[in-house]
Each structure stands twice: as C-alpha cells, then as structure tokens.
Length: 126
Image (cartoon, rainbow, N blue to C red; front, top):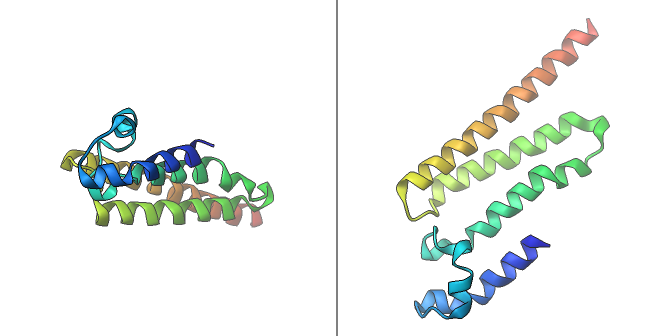
C-alpha cells in the first residue's frame, strides 16, 4: 500500500521537480524527496521496497528453508549496499556515508547469521 502510494506520488512530482517549478504537490511531498539529489528523487521508494522485501516478502519463503531466507536477505543487502555506494543518492556526503555504513552493518549481521546457521548445522550432524 504505502510503496504504491509513495511511488505514485513521486511519479506525479517528476515534471515539476525536473523543471524546478515547485507546486502544491511537490511541497506537500517534500518529505519523500528533499534529502535526495534531483536525479534520485525517487530513492525513498527504493528504500521502502528494500524494507518491505527484508521484513515481509522474505517471510513468504517457508520456515523449513530458513537458510534460503538468510541467503536472499544477504543478496538483497549486498546489492543495495553496492547500489548506495555507486549511486550516492543523498545530497549530503554524511548521509551517503551513513547509509552505506548502516547497510554494511546489516549485511554483516546477515553474513554472521548465515555462518552461525552453517556451523550449527555442521555441529548437529556430528
């Protein structure tokens, strides 16, 4: 719901934002795009999609395949961290650095959980 709403609002703001002619809608939705470079004004929708996938869609994978859930989450975090580092969507350098750092911390968390799951599986076998 919110992803579709935010994306449609940002799509409606495209022309005024590119033309640098703010209207009532762009001012009302500034909380969605003001922190980002003009080219990446839609990045908040990407961020929300990442959060939804990590907290919701990954849970659609059956619990018996918990390791697959972790692998999918790790891949999503890896791709997102690389995209953040390459794109640098935020206007402020500090925000870009902080976003990449927190994304890497989350990636390390998933990697360590993967390793723990692997080692616990090995330990149970012996």
